[in-house]
Length: 163
Image 1 (cartoon, rainbow, N blue to C red):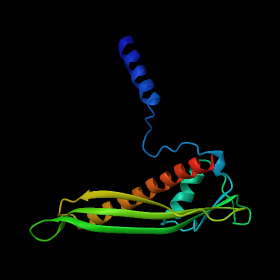
Image 2: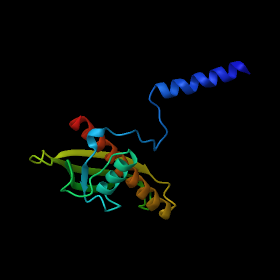
Image 3: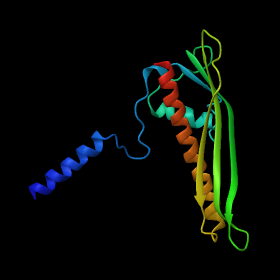
Image 4: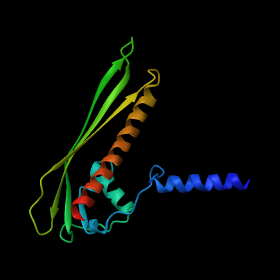
């Protein structure tokens, strides 16, 4: 019994030591992001809205308007592309590829806008070919997940730039 507890304790400690986190876990963001204003962050189903939500979850103190912001972040491009990779005998899609392309620009309050940075995410989605409603729901969930991952990548880039 004691050996089982010891092995369980060692397993939990080794998982936390290697950087493993449950999905959805949000680390505290750098204090350098405080005072950031996300332009268009009030629009929920956009990358800017997802980015603003993730920043708030990470504990960043966002500026209320552009006048009080230390830095302004603008998503200048958000483009979703999809294409069918494979079809079955009746012409229904079996595999699809989704691409999320984004461009963003950081503008310090006292300076000129920085150059636009671009990111791209690509995901593949396989369907069973029989459940049309499930395919649409799964594609919507995948896009939400891709926006969330893209927002987290932008946050990491901003932290590296501003630190």
